[in-house]
Length: 65
Image (cartoon, rainbow, N blue to C red):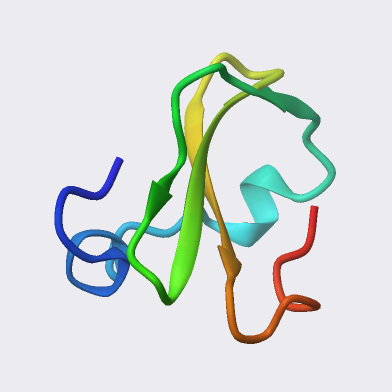
């Protein structure tokens, strides 16, 4: 989970598309991180990997649930 900013903490740590496309998962009960630009939620994928999903506060249609 990012600690200060999504951009500075997560920019270079993205999932490889080919390996994770179509994987299912669920969001955990951990409170989301909000930096007034985006909201980040923690999720567990069917592979057992932990991932973080970002939705934008300004562009609500980008990264929607």
